[in-house]
Length: 217
Image (cartoon, rainbow, N blue to C red; front, side, top):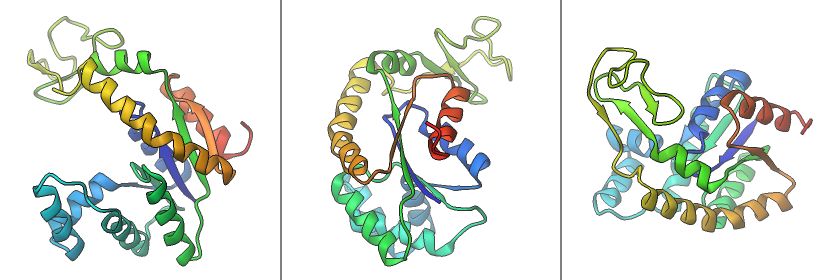
């Protein structure tokens, strides 16, 4: 089985991809992780990507597709793959379709995690973590049991990501929606699109994705 997860930053794609690895014996393929690993390993594609990234430019689609092809060739211990962060454009989706067709494979499903922008902004800008152990917290949904003290390690130092502010988050959401709307139509026409409520509780999102993949939603 080969799946694509679609959803804006902060929607919980990474969390659900990790759960799918367990639930469906799938291997998560994060293009960001693959790029960093290739650069660190000094592979041919990694050297090309590293040069581009150092210039602050976007890595071309053919390099990303090449990395995906290499990873698929290595296989894995699971029963398939989850693509997280790719494709993001129609051109990338078409390139992925060509790659899979050349391998005699197909994309089985695309799971879209639908979000409410205002609620997602609130979710993201309220995040903070322990500077010592990395334990995650939220201003509204998960505060330390003792104010100002990490539950896990007792540290009193906390940090917030610089880009976790409303202006940046809304800009990223606008870019996501602009890029993704054509993809939604593209995969809907192929009959592969499965949409779930990405704002639900983590366990409910997990169950909704399971039902969608099993054809009961």
